[in-house]
Image (cartoon, rainbow, N blue to C red; front, side, top):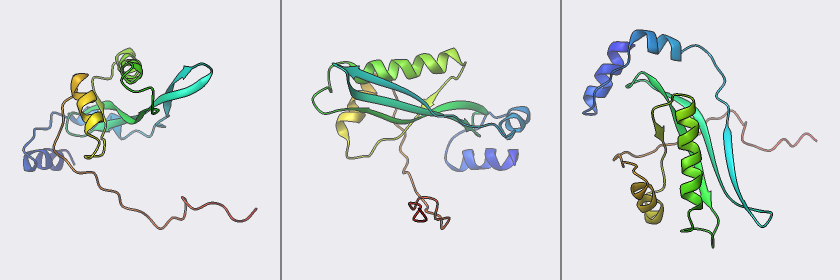
Length: 143
């Protein structure tokens, strides 16, 4: 698998630095817990960020996947998004995780500007979703 990882990286114009030990360690089953931060103002929730742990086969190390960062209408551009993102950065640093990755819709230019201002880099990739037939996203109708 290691040689395929390197071939994949080369195919996409990148370079993989994963070691065999890092790959073996990543393939050990461990739960990927969701971690969340919330922003509260006047007793109401006005924003949140959530992350899960993931692993980069190219880099051979874990990264945080920023699943969501959202600030409600009327509270944007007030530093709340930056504070949430800083909390995520601090969490990554505390656990020795060198990178955070995420995606945002290509139409969300305000979010892209925010992330770039915060020091993020943008990669030219598309995100795909493949639905399964497990039925696990359908509500339970037995009760």
